[in-house]
Length: 240
Length: 226
Image (tube, rainbow over all chains, first blue to last red; front, side, top):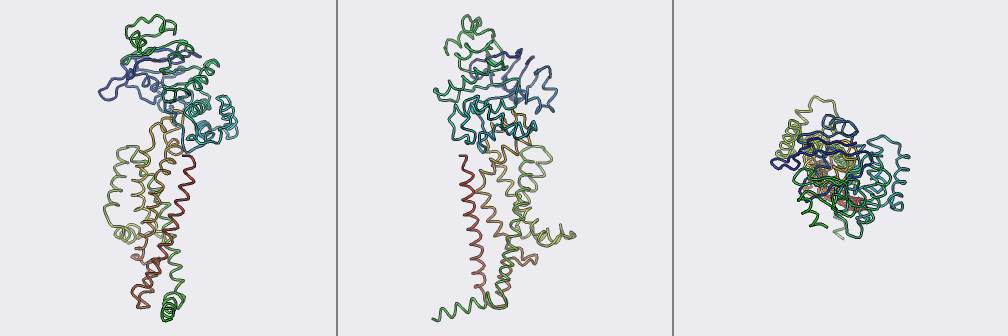
C-alpha cells in the first residue's frame, strides 16, 4: 500500500531524514516512535507530500507521488491526515468542517455529504455537536471531529501526527478509542505517537526512528520486549 | 428670539431656497455610490494583489509590489486627476465610474496590505489541513484561509471604508458633484463661508458613525464562532 525508498529531506543545512525505507501493507497499523527531532513527523508529512522530499520515492497504491505532483490533490484524497493541533476550521461549524472537501474536492452532492458526516459524527460519539463551532468543543472532541473530517473523504490510509500530544490527559482515552475502532475496522494507519500503550496494544508493527532513519522495526512484542538497537533500548528506558 | 430667527434664516438660505437640500441630497447619493463601488472593486483588487504577493511568483509579486509602492507614495488627488485626464481619458465610461475606479485602485493598494497581513496571520496548519483533505491551493485559500483573514481584518477594513468615504470629497477635482462639492456650491451662491460645510460635516459624520455601528454588529455576529 505504501512504499518508501531512500527518502531524504533537508531543511536548508539541516538533514532531517537521511534515508528512510519502509513498506506498509493494506490494513496494517504501524506506529512510529522515537525521540523528538528524529524525523517522525517529517516522514509522515512526506507520505502525502505536505513536505516535499529532497530525494527518494514514495509509492501510494502503486503510484509514485513525486512524479505525480500535478495530481497530488486527487492522490491526497486517498490519505486522511490528523494533526497534533487538530487544525479544525474555526469559522465553520462541525458539519461544515466535515462536508467542505467532499463537496469541493470530490464534487459530492451536499445531501450525501451531510448524511455521511452525520454518520461519521455518530461513529466518533459526537452526533449532538453537528452545528457547534470548534472553539466550543474540548480538545478530545476537536480531535474526534478532525478524524471524522478526514474519514469523510473515504480515505484508504489514515496518517496520524501525534494525535494525542496536545490533549489533556483525561481526553487521550476517547481519541485512542476512536483510533482503535478504526484499526479494528481494517483501516491502514500510520501513527506517529508517544503513546507507548497504544503502540503496544494496537499496532501490527512499530518503527523506531532515530536521527533521520528507521533504526529498528518489528512487531510491538519484539520492540518493547526485546529491543536490539541500543538507541531503542535507551529511548524506551526513558519513556516507559 | 433673535437666535431662532437667525437659525431659521440659515436653514432657509442653505437648504430650502431653490431646493438646495436637493443638491446636498444628490451629492450624498453620489458620494455613497462612489464609495460603495470603489470599496467593492478595491477589496477584489486587494485580494488579488495580496494573493499574488503571497504566491511568490516573482514577476507577479514584483508588479504587485510596484503598484502598492506607487499608490502609497503619491497623493490620491494626483492619482484621481491623472487617471481621469490621462489613463482613462479615452474611455467611454461615465465620470462616476472613472472616479470609482480611481478610488478603487487607491483603496486596493491599502486593502491588499491589510489582507496580506491577515492571510499571513492565519495559522499554517489551516492551509495544511485543507490541502491534506485534497483541496487545491486556491480552494484552500478561498474557503479556509481568506474567510479567516477577512474576519481578522474586518475592523481595519471598516476603517478603510470610512477613510474612503471621506477621501471621495476630492471628487470635485474632476467636476463631480459629490457631497463636498454640493456644499461648496452653496457656499459660493450664499456668500456664506462655513455654514454649508457645517451641514456637510454633520452628514459625513452621520454616515461614518453608521458605518462604525454596523461594523460593530457585524463583528459580534462573526465572533459567534469564537
